[in-house]
Amino acid sequence: MTIVYEPIIGLEVHAELATHSKMFCACPVVDTTQVEPNVAVCPVCAGMPGVLPVVNQKAVELGLRVALALDCEIAPCSLFARKNYFYPDLPKGYQISQYENPLAVNGKITIHTSQGEKVVRIRRVHLEEDTGKLTHIAESVKNSETEATPAHTLIDLNRAGVPLLEIVTEPDLHSAEQVGAYARALHSLLRYLKVNSGDMQKGAMRIEPNISIRPEGSVTFGIRCEIKNLNSFRALERSVDYEIQRQSILLDEGKPVIQETRGWVDEQGITVTQRSKEEAHDYRYFPEPDLPPLVVEREWVEQIRASLPELPIARLRRFQSQYQLSAYDAEVLTAEQETADYFETALAAAPGISPKMFANWICGELFGLLNQAQTSLVDCSLSPQSLADLVRLVAAGEINQGTGKTVLAEMFNSGKEAEAIIADHGLRQISDGDAIAGLVRQALENNPSQVQTYLGGKTSIAQWLFGQVMKSAKGQANPQVVRQELNKQLEGLKNQS
Image (cartoon, rainbow, N blue to C red; front, side, top):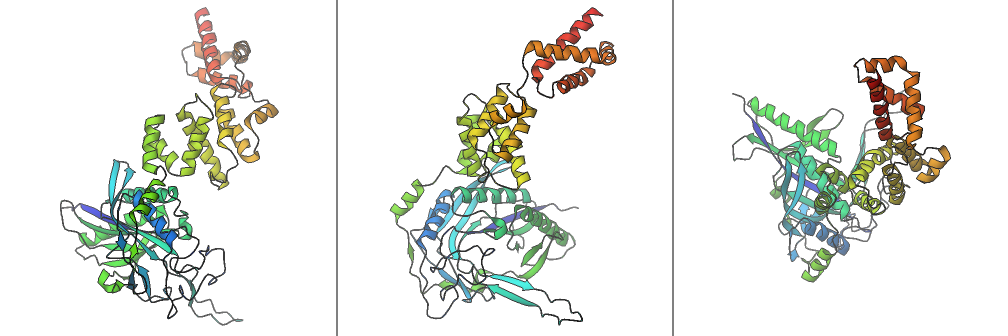
């Protein structure tokens, strides 16, 4: 009998907080891809004896913004602890984190999946510091001129001590699709709150799924494996799918799943063993003796709550109700705050134009141009007002859809306005009834055999004739007027025959 397994998945997300200085010292937070190694290091973040950490108030504020947006219960008093483990990129030999008394607990977030909305429970939100960065150098090839360089590892402590927010879910997810939806929703939320850059390729947000499987109908959890430090949605979904399959095969073969930490090898599409999975007691947590309890005043919490923006899920629902957009369009437009702002600004600049029309232009043509240019909407020179001017011309029949796309591309690349481009290239649409009647008459006269085919009963040839009219008009004739006139003239010829 084939056993059907149910995946049980919880996620840990580490998000770097957008502060200017580190979590417990005054060292600046720097882009580790742009500066020399080990330039933003002091005795505190280097773990020198006798130094004292001091909590970064801005990091606490940003953590509270996230916790409140996730509808968490805020702890009036939380504690920092030492999480002991030894690794070359951890200069202290321990990490300052929170464990038994975190910043916030018991939150939730709503995600969108192919099965509809789903609420994912948040177990805890807590503050901690990041580790350094290791670069592993493989042994070089020995040749006749040089000796082989021994394999070695370089350590950069620029990132050590950068404020991190760890967000841990309950095991509420059951597929790679749900995991991806959660990660995207949280990524969007962090960007809306302006607490995280969202640059996953630089490690600003790192995702670690804990995956186990059990026979459907069972209430007992299986043995879980954790996949470490995933920094893309694609890698997250692929690795979860692979791990579910790997564990299913093991159980089908009567082999045990070993609790362990695994890494994702993207090129091969597999997970591999890194180390045995630690439990909390392995880290020997104990209260950080150099930091007092973190007391958060209720008045400060309420001030932060009042400063929160309209959150992605609320804006998505408003776009659906206010603008009558589909769930898909609303989700795409509200995934990034800048896109949602751009849409609403453009819409306000062109009263009377349907929101759906703007959604199509932004999600289709404009996103396509942004992808080709490998740029973002924030860095795009095309203003929402300029897009509104173009869409208004299309809606009014001044230019047709195809010409509009051409004009948009030139606007995007040159920075010129739509009216100027249309005037320079003579692109204004022909809507005059007499002019179009002449173009249709000429097309029918130039293609007598096709006309006879139509009159013989093959009415699909009308589409070909339509193309001939548009070709002679260089694509500038109003398509609706052309179709009406073509049908009128063809019906007239049919009545004469």
